[in-house]
Length: 298
Image 1 (cartoon, rainbow, N blue to C red):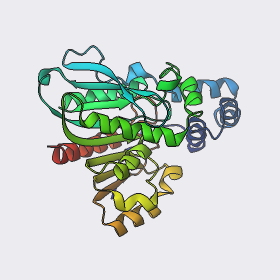
Image 2: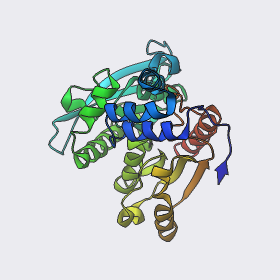
Image 3: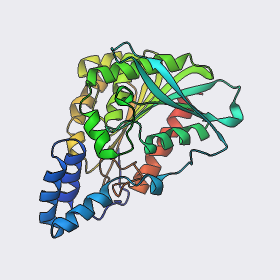
């Protein structure tokens, strides 16, 4: 199924592809600036373009951290992967302080638990869920407050251990105070891959929503019991290349899933802190996400 919302970016395709390569470590900052300069008219314009494409957390914030409707905390969760502990941000509605709630694990991008992902957790809390957002950068001091430093730190981590940390966090969240034991997950970019992974590892996970993430290991697809809702940006050829094989595995396993490819949308289209944000696609994808959580976690 394909939606056709209006694109959210006016940047040349080549520049957006370069930025995607930079964000995901295929080229470094210098490489981006040198190549971008060829398309935007010089070094100064390339530097300005990189600044404009990078996240502006204040601009994209939807729910303030001091919103009185929320109860916010942090919890340290023991990791079986040799990482000591992983710290998670926990958000829930203050009006339901004594009520057990369904839990949604929020899996971040490849920069750790930055302000945007914390904001996503707060949005979920105001919709009546307990959101638990682990930070894979915990052992390196947590999100450092700078996207470039966060990306560089994240690249040093063992991806297998990160996956085990998120599995441990999900199992812990099931029995946390304030949880009713019903579990879902949503993840973005790297976190989309984590959402797919959790679907193969957590037998009682009810719903998993990967946004433009890597698929689960195809051999593990038959283990999935959760209902999947998979979102892709139509212009995200790098991520989308893995979809045909993933879809074939899901069909063969009889997995319950729905997939939407939003034509004209970029990788990261749901992230409202950058110009890649596509409001039409993001609004539709989020509405579908919330419908799934309300239906499966009720």
